[in-house]
Length: 151
Image (tube, rainbow, N blue to C red; front, side, top):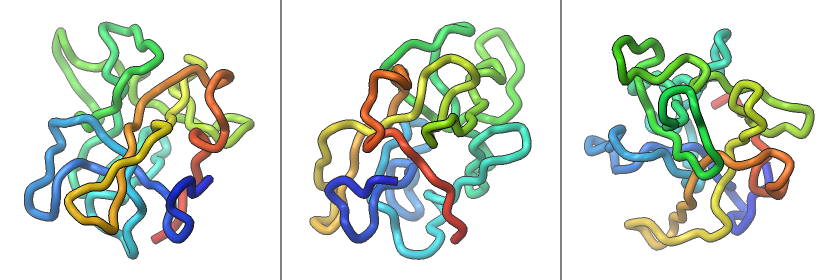
């Protein structure tokens, strides 16, 4: 919600790469929001509390080990329903807005936060920041409050 160093557009979830060359196999980042509904930035909060990227038919997933997710854990796109020994449990995909408007992973007390520094992307007009999970009560609200905006 806080636009940080991007007064005109703020930060949104983003898949690394450029149109036609997206890298869904890399961690998600926060990128300055693009005008309109860019396919790599369109996210839906579905009825199962999953953050769904329609362009990739995948959901935001906390990349923990087994059922354990720790502070600093990165977020990636993975199939919303996975099967197999190394599949991410559904609890690693369920995000709800808490009373502070933070996106919390289940009841883990871990919230989605953007890094405290930004850097230029391929274009001098664009910026990006890291995107990861950290203790909800220890992170600043300016870097951890989110809102869903209709395109």
